[in-house]
Image 1 (spheres, rainbow, N blue to C red):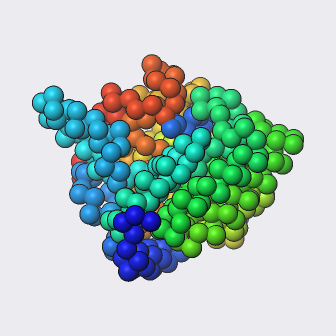
Image 2: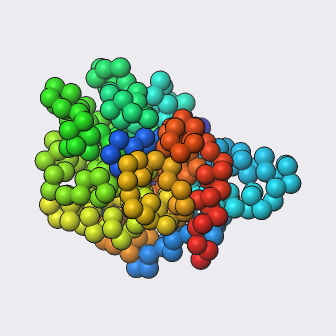
Length: 348
């Protein structure tokens, strides 16, 4: 791979593993998901801290993200305050969501950037057939065979680079909530289980199978058998709160209970937009571009919880959840919403 440095990569892998050991090693109904190491510490990262240089993170920061391009546009236009605020997003690592047509270009670009800097790339695999039950983020691979080929290409593009993959936001939860049933549910379990095994063939890839969020699933017990059938026991754990707004405290409590039911499985938490918690009062589509939300805990391995392997920004802050509340299509960059998230993030 271009820019690959074996000695740095090996050091990063050892460091990442040690950090995960030291630390104890999504969405709501129908939501659209859109679209070297860091020293261990018993102190949780503070929510909404000011943007730090990328050198302080073990994860790769995309220098050409939509947020980074927006910062450059604002600077050119002399909008210095907006540029300053958006650096709270552009200088933080967020997951890359590779294309459903061909993941190789997006994964390869991210891997080149990450390995060239001795960092870990964070990826979201989001292309399962019948994705999002036909809602805002409908789509996905046309059938199971196509999905298998897509996962193969995704994994091959990772190679032996250090990577974290959050596997198929909503996919298990949509079986649990009854949106995906019958033969479709059986196929989904097979596809997810196979995807776990394929991704885990990459020597430095960690895989977390998405398990929804507390506001959606409510009873962790309902997730146990579905997650097992989807291969969670062969993955590195499960992921919670992807593209959702539940607080760190609520998600950790839910995840700890689910972990106990799964024999101590570890998990990750999407903290990208949960700095102000969920929309007060909830209501229909409270998950979809809710007003008044804020950036959450910056991505880190220093979670202060032996079961939480990482806080991650899986949802890319500033990308729309869908065409609700005046938003553009799911996954489209929305600078006004991004500025609101950044502006309301408490300063450290």
